[in-house]
Image 1 (cartoon, rainbow, N blue to C red):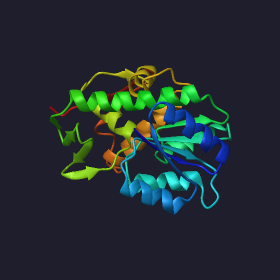
Image 2 (cartoon, helix red, strand yellow; image 1 turned 60 degrees about the vertical axis):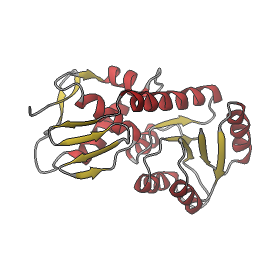
Image 3 (cartoon, rainbow, N blue to C red; image 1 turned 90 degrees about the vertical axis):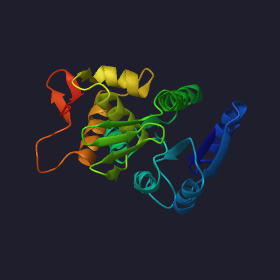
Length: 227
């Protein structure tokens, strides 16, 4: 497994690198924004660990730039415990966040949960799924809507796939956290709302009422199939 650490805290990088290599992870690191983008463009990483405070750029801005070139899962590290920073991280395309200082075992657990979920879906869903206006390549993790490819993050893809393959079934926020995140989440239920909102921005017509992902008020979210 390949991990890219984007951080300028040398002691943290050294600690993470040592711990990851004990599990046979291949680790690279950089604190430079342009180098990070170049690495991600040229190398297929399994996970990116991104600090919000970097010497040459804001971590949120870099997260947004990464999303323009890759769907690699991103875990944001922040020393600021304010909810707004965490929500913004998710809004900009991160899959998860952790507040410094953190437990390395918890970070590993979150990484393994992301990879386990991704690989499980790849193995069990190798076919192309066509539902209404969507064509979903579960193995390649690609989605097209009206013959146009939609750029989704890992969790946005998992969320859409879960809802599409269970049309009409209402999932509570708690259920979505358990299924999509795959572990006991330490944040709050707004995480689900953020991802649903981002997904809607990419697949729904802004000038019309929601057509695909609907809200069951007081319960949760569901996919409305036309068929």
